[in-house]
Image (spheres, rainbow over the protein chains, first blue to last red):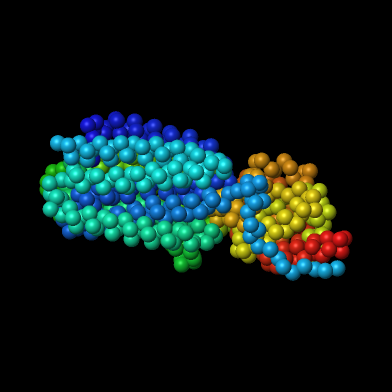
Length: 115
Length: 483
């Protein structure tokens, strides 16, 4: 991953500073009702580590590196896929009143008390 | 060379696009209306980035070229195995088990970051002291996040039931951390000078990771299960940080940006949670809550007044408005759907119903919102503490189900109470309060609740599910008679 512009020293610190500020501001606006999906969603986003793991795996040249690289990809892929699956499931459940009315009732009691 | 350019340009552009989609996706997650599309946007970013990373095969180092076919196959197998297993588990896990699942996925991310660092360290490809030090710091944070998250998962899943505490634990843990850092410093020295007076570099790397993993375990063991959400949130931020640092080592801006965004977001979320629990983060990490609390029992004035579930149900049927305060006890009884069924009956009778959710209701902030949403409750009926607390004074009935400490007025008045200062829901201000509770026990903090003894409060004893069935039947019976 050698880009023309090498990310060294202060350039890296600038990227870190701006990204940290961005994350702080974006999350600061999220209502408490979404805190759990949000934690899970940000957990999914650091699943991007799988890309770094792929790089390490593809560039492995010894058996030790291959074994560790394999586990890096395995764990990173788990982080990304699992994080997406649970976040998507949770967020799909949030429905406004209008939409919820059209949804099929979750559970209906059959037993009616006749007077 | 054309392939060399392609191997840089395609991943470069793809990572930039992915980083943008991550930020945009997280931004969309800030409202329930756009949140489902937010995670999909971020998901597309992930897909693009992973596919683009295959272009790295065009530019692998000379040393790795003979192994390319094997490496490529291993990468695909690992992607399918790891991704497939986690996807399958994530699709079927119960919503009540969500906190430990997040802990587990988070630990995997930390482990991946640590493993990347290990590959780099074993390959001596980290030239220069700065990159070496950054690699080691990222490795340590990632390893701590891995072993710590696994302990957090074990505690929430009740594999480990009791916090492990012993005398001088904090000193011992501090020593474990110092030893890890010392081994790391030795590695920097050994690699930079080319001499290794004590240990070979490879042995030093193994020792370094061993120490970091042990430190993660030691750090998490003494923390009680109720504090685990804060701990998971911290480790979530840790993993983000580790990913960002390894991104610098690999010169990959997508990892740097995504990792640091999560690092900052995780830190903010941790502070918000700790604030909602009326604790400081250091208090969660370094003190033993619960040990000192159960010393004195204050005398309560008044008495506990039990009432039949059916009577309470009928009273609510004729109320103008009702605010429901659900707690984790509701989820333990698996009674969310029954509750919403009761709510729909009340709404049908013209009663205004709202849900008031405390920030720490459930085992993870926001988990109660998810559990209610799962039962079909529309999100516009769910209100957060600061938005609804003033409404209690004008409300006929506050129905407290499976919640205790979050409605304890001692948090407002009693300076000696361990929960003093914690923001609470003002259920006691309602004209009538019904508390559905299994028995006469205390909340997890072990504190008597003055609300239960108030003149306006009546207790409905029983399992939440059974109580709600009785309330539903009572209201249905009433309407049937009227018809």
